[in-house]
Image (tube, rainbow, N blue to C red; front, top):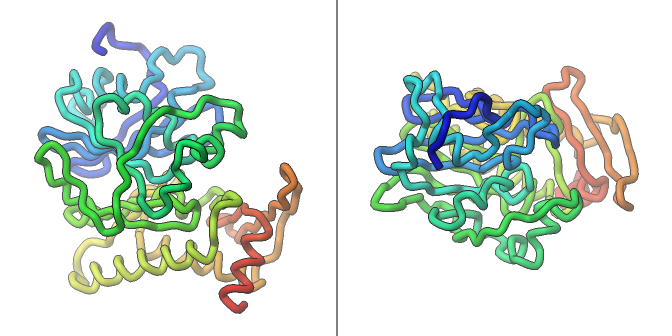
Length: 309
């Protein structure tokens, strides 16, 4: 994989902590701009999500493979060295969920790396359903070929003799297979597309706002418990699949929950409604635009009925 150093990459990497980097696919053709996270260990690189496969709007980009970027491209905040120079570290790839903008690079790792996904809903990730549920079929793009190892709620990730200390949390809501990672060592919470700021929180038809509340409440309890043990310690940080990184976890979690609660409770009014492929989609936005929601109207109605609003 090592050749002449490409001049321009579809990805940019910045350091979040001593061991963790955020990689942004900053100009993809889908306008998703996904956040990919890499945590470095001496013999292992843990990767959370793989982005849009390097599909970029920029014709001058000549490095479009995430794996090639990790193994060959210099990163200024890593002393000018690639994050996994010459591929000397093994990979474990964690899929926060199966939507296309998080898995289109996964095939680059499928032949020799451990790929993990939530065991919460195996049928959702089955070979007969993954094309639809990844949204690849809707977009008319090839669904990546990969076979994830399904991992249980509260499991810790270990690979090639490395105990990462990263705990998997099942967080269904955005999708049935959504998961989060909890890094107790660095007090970092990675929540995928469960929530973020300044862009719409999106639910597909297979999502559930009822499940989302349960998942967010679990994350809030976790953060409160951790911070109560060290009341004068550093705050837990939250990292999302888009837009939000290194935020105050408790603030982001509680504020987003409050917004969705106001939607279900009728305090937030519909800003826009449209029909897309026979599904009525509603859009809500808080006045300051920090939080917004786009989802099928049926999910809002289902939540109102089941949560007794």
